[in-house]
Length: 78
Image 1 (tube, helix red, strand yellow):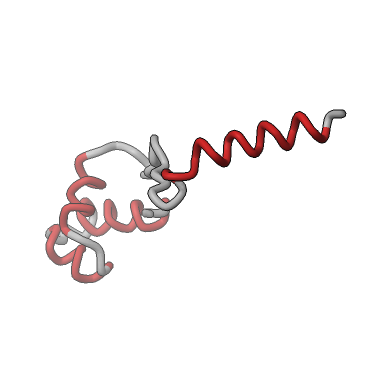
Image 2 (cartoon, helix red, strand yellow; image 1 turned 45 degrees about the horizontal axis):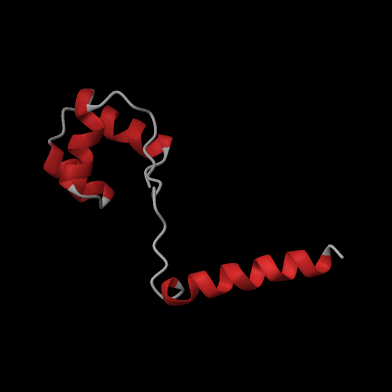
């Protein structure tokens, strides 16, 4: 994840100092594609959140767990 300071440094290196994308990537140890993305966009922060959280290990027992939780909540209410 890029922080605001890194994004600012990328832009300063390119716009003020005139460094190439490859030089910036080498100096900051980030990929050239990331440097390109920062320079092309006007955003000040980048974040990624997964829409669907996969649960492959629990997938087989999800229905059974839901049934047990429902049974547990109905028993504790009495």
